[in-house]
Image 1 (cartoon, helix red, strand yellow):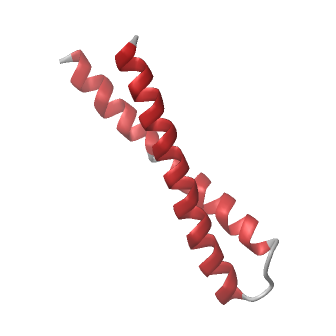
Image 2 (cartoon, rainbow, N blue to C red; image 1 turned 30 degrees about the horizontal axis):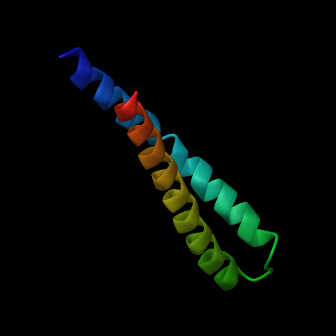
Length: 68
């Protein structure tokens, strides 16, 4: 039961990363472009890149935790 509770708590903590990813990608894109269309397009690509990077790090850490 405790493992299930810890798993649910860990998933809830991931929701805090969403506003951070949106903010970082919008600010980064806004430093590169001046018009709204290119900013949103670039922000979407950067957000996907950040999520992919976070997923790769998650997998690496999960593999390390299984090996130890």
